[in-house]
Image (cartoon, rainbow, N blue to C red; front, side, top):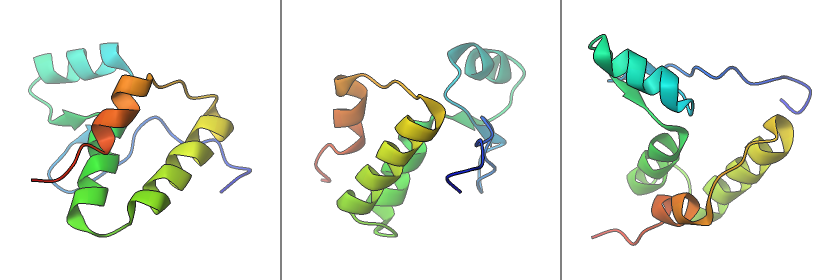
Length: 84
């Protein structure tokens, strides 16, 4: 995985695609396509209990390095807001 360049689109159940490109999300929504951000996907995985907070943080760090991905601290904090 480290040598692969990840696609900006990831297929998940219940969504037509996942992307962190704001313009792509806006366009998709205008077309009636269900789309989620990377942060929403990572939060859903964490909340489902499929992966731990530490595992999600590791995935996020790997994405940051591999893709030169930038995320605000606020957006990162939102991924890990306490569960109700």
